Length: 256
View 1: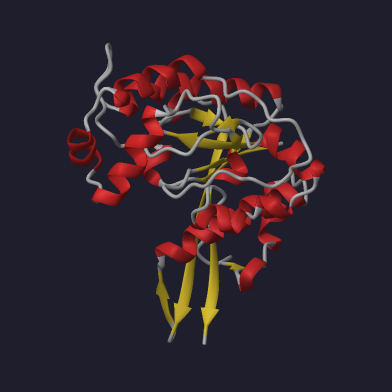
View 2: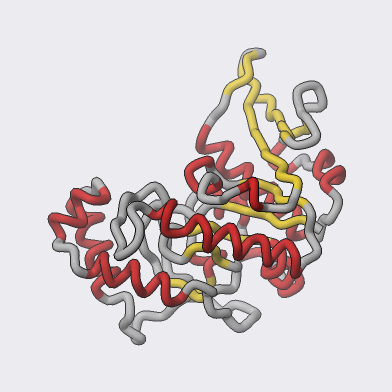
């Protein structure tokens, strides 16, 4: 079995349509409450400076934190609430109940506010990047706050799912929160490139979407063997056998 790790996105939107399952409770509720409590004490000016936000985004996120515990504001499933490029590729809106069940066991979304999320976990829109230097009562920065907690949680996930492989489909900013030396699993990294005029090019937008496409491909096909990932051809990508290694899978897309 394999455990899939993805990053969250800055863009989020409460999902108001029906979904075929009951939501689950995030595992780090108390930690989330602690972080929100700190953020609620910030003025708009302090929040704007801390997160380097425009006036519009400052107002939006100030209100989000102030109203975070308002039960009238509904929480929605994590996999359906994030809306960035990775989640456009993931396209969980098209999953059936079997896909969600597989993902609930095998997919984790790293988060600066929630730590580690399962796809069905109930969350509210927020903005808090993992690289934030938020000061808590015992830590400086979210890497220090979350590192032990998330590493321990993922180790338990590996054990409960009998997985010995982590598919790292997250960004470096998020994946480095893990103490990988403490994780008993083979970690496979993924790289996606475009070939334009014979030249290999890394395009951030396309790579993010491709990471989501790969995660969705694994979920929808309930893949357990990483060798089968070499057959990935979503959105015209193809396996790069020449430069890939057993722990670094590379895929190419030719752009005419």
